[in-house]
Image 1 (tube, protein in one colour):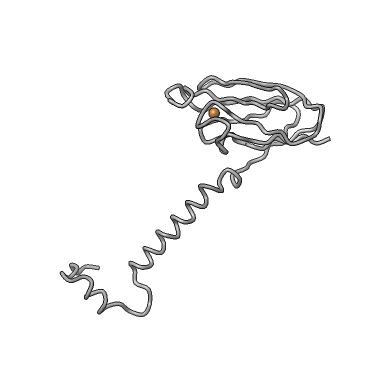
Image 2 (cartoon, rainbow, N blue to C red):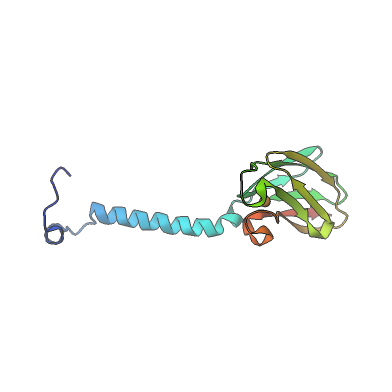
Amino acid sequence: MTDKPPKNTKDQIAADTPAKPTRRSILAFGLIAAGTIGAAGYFLWPAVRQSSLTSAEGTSQIAISMSGFSPNVISARVGQKISLQLINKDNSLHKDGGGWHQFAIDDLGIDFKVPPLQTSEVSFTVDAPGTYDFYCGICCGGSANPYMHGKLVVEA
Ligand SMILES: [Cu+2]
């Protein structure tokens, strides 16, 4: 494309339009497709990005930030000691909650808060099998935010 565009662009395009897609229409299609995939991805991301952790002996690490828990699925067995190192990736400059995050499981009476850029350890055992929701209720709209949730799956 070395030529300057003609003054009457519409007529020029109409006259020049070949049967095959123009570079411009391919570009437009690409942008729309990328936008659509991006929007779908944004809404599906909390479900898709699940990463699992099988809690074995020793301490497992979970990173917490404004974008959620990573990993956000923890598997364990009944009666097994679950030791987690909660790594807060956010600093205190965050207006939303001052950079604090939480690891809370209502059904187990666990409510643990991690200061900005700190790492805290929490240990507990679970006596009943089930899937327990853990969440942070401090930042980003609290527990209503789907990003700030994870699952603890405890098998018998
Ligand atoms: Cu949080």
